[in-house]
Length: 189
Image 1 (tube, rainbow, N blue to C red):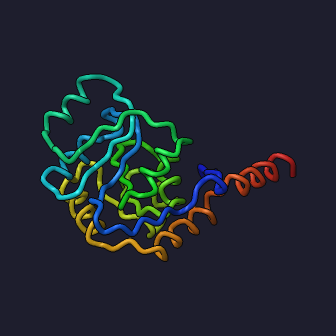
Image 2 (cartoon, rainbow, N blue to C red):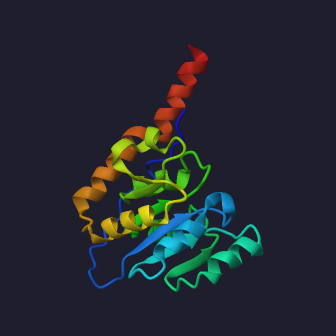
């Protein structure tokens, strides 16, 4: 059974401002398993920011990321995913990145997709089962591969049409009401 999100809550956000600096976002506890170190290395020296949403699980790994001295990597801490702040940060991102070693398909990626945000995900788990060719994939140890994806995504102009396309894909595959009916039909048939 796939993870799902409530589609009444999520919708694409259209921000066509050319004056704001483009940024990418990654959501998850700051820890080795989530592999934000790879993302920080890939972003170092680029002309786009990475916002990391999540609470550090410990000082050692958090400080290791900070020592890279990637000034464009911003730690935002924990933000509740039902807040307007979270929705605005995710929805206005130019891309969503999950560099995890062992994630499966994170709900935060489904949330981003449902808001029309392009995805860059590792290729070790079930992500392809969820997103097929809609997402871009990289190995969780491949800094240069992720960097290429970031540069390619940053060069693309996000249009209202492309955001609606991503959002509609998420609605068709990850709607919580659809999954609830599927579960009930499984147990009660």
